[in-house]
Image (cartoon, rainbow, N blue to C red; front, side, top):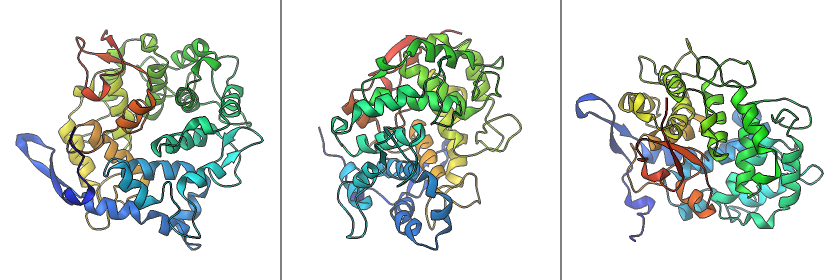
Length: 379
């Protein structure tokens, strides 16, 4: 097996196919590296507006940052650039050490920042960061973390995010994904969790945040992703109808929106493409037009990707824009690929021996999904 090229051996700017008649758009890899690498210094400044408004979700912000960088460079380079396992300076701990300090011993979960209460969202982000960093999860108080997640399941199979009781299908995905990372899916009532998720599918084919709630692309990923990990995709009613609802989200601009009559937004490149990948219907949208939309949302000078062209970039949309290009197969093959089920680099999924179920087409699936259980497509 050949050694993957280092960051310096890859071009800073490259053309990627995106458009009809064999046209290309420029991908500004060097600018994105600069943008991502400079984020921590910007956010840590006392006067930083971005730091203040993202203080409560810093755990997820670090996950988006680390995962985005992981799609542009190899693991050792990401570690060096962000200080993942070694402290970058005397006044800043390594990312791994910081994550571990966000563990809330009293409840068993992780908070979004130091001193914050535990929440299922940030517990999953913490585990994702740690597995990307090759941290052995067996060193964690795993039983307490599992008990925290188990305590969030309700009698109807749904999950709340924390002690305050908000129910959302996002939390179902987070719980099921986190327990899979901890090899503890058997600790919850999985059939009941699947039953609840299935009850959240609407007549239009989409899924909502709870039973009876409006269909939304973000919730579709959470529900389909959770069902994939639970190996229960058979409960999706009329996958073709779901695929149609997702494909209908593509706008004239080539971008995707989250609901009917909304503007296209780069982040839905992830939420929709991941779900289409799992149900085997990525070819139901124009990948070239979507790639062109994402490319136009890049900041060619300072780096990063915005929600739509001509807006300011942020790390949330940068990660999901890069993930969208990865799922479309638009990035060079030497780049690490994103997994549509776990939102982790594929090599990390393979290392962790994570399992899931995806829908094939006459037994055929993308190479990145070939290690998963494959079920045949039905309407």
